[in-house]
Amino acid sequence: MAGSLFTRYIGLDTTEAKRWVPQVEDGILTLDLKVEGQPVSSNRRGTGESARETE
Image (cartoon, rainbow, N blue to C red):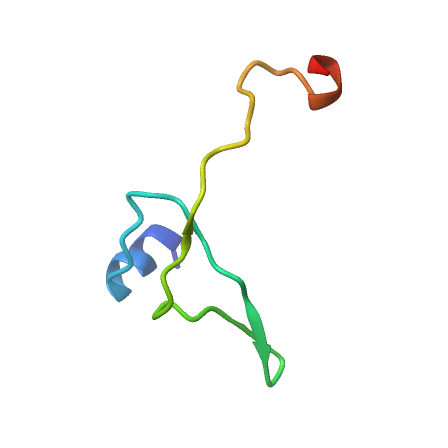
C-alpha cells in the first residue's frame, strides 16, 4: 500500500506537513486525526553540512 494513496483514500490533506503525537492502544500505534496536527517545517539543511559544521 502506498502512503499517498492511503492518505488520499482517508481524505487526509497532505499539502502541508503536520505532526501528531502517537498513542499505543492495545499494542497498536494510533494517531487521532480528529485532533488538528501541528504544522512543521523542514529542519534539513539541503547543503550537505551537518549541524556541528555550522556551529
